[in-house]
Image 1 (cartoon, helix red, strand yellow):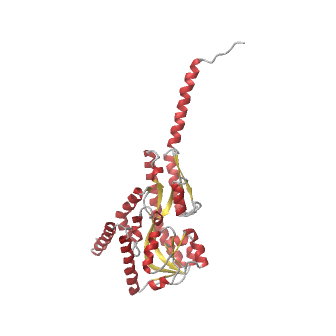
Image 2 (cartoon, helix red, strand yellow):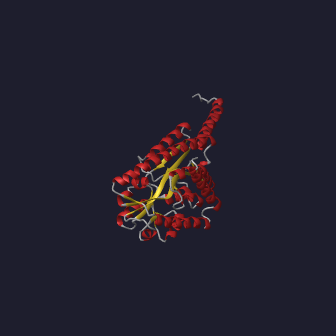
Image 3 (tube, rainbow, N blue to C red):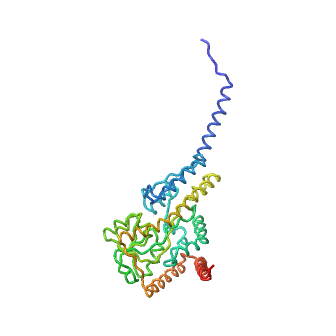
Length: 346
């Protein structure tokens, strides 16, 4: 029997070919990334449609080196639960309301000073100058965000009419369980709020555990809280916003070119949400009115009391170190300039 010997050259050809394939595999694996992001936004909502569209665009432009997987509808829990999962690497980010990230960057609550704004015109003017401050602060705190997503004004909504501070003291007032700054500031009004996860609000309204909430018309309709309230005090309480935040160390593992694509595409997608939110909030007001919900306006005397105590709350946010004095002074200066220019027809 003749023994057939393999040509020696094949070993030397196969080895570099194998090494090349291994290198290609390792390179592809190292550059590929899946960003797992949780949100309370329900499947089928405008938010999810636009975020998924953005994710599809990211996958296309990065040739699937980066994919974004969403967990909508609160399946990963409330914001606190999502943040815990981000810390252990189970998730890479989430869509958060501002208060949820205040533990990392307290001054992101600059828009949460009670009764600071009276119109969306004011807000639009201030955001031109202050959004970047919030984005930079969150970045320094370890989160990459792609712009501010406005949620409109929160109003006091209740089962019984609230027109005076005394009325509010009689109510069982809800506040998000993860927003300790707002919990502290609202106590200036002489109430002890009831902290609960957003997911528990509707059932708590039904059960009578709470009877007063602060949210936007759009939020009330989307979350079906409007089925449990009868009155809205028609004075803006605070300006709400949210962010899509990615854990910065995880984000920085993605190559620079792909990070640029993600930032460009998702910033555009979230800007579309920001614009659409404004339209949806206006429609939500009409929905509330069509359901027979009564909008009340406090008297001039009662308004003065609301604003006086709100000023104390803002001052305490500064005195406690939550909000830097220079940043609050800048915001106040911008508001004064806005009203001055408007009075002069500019």
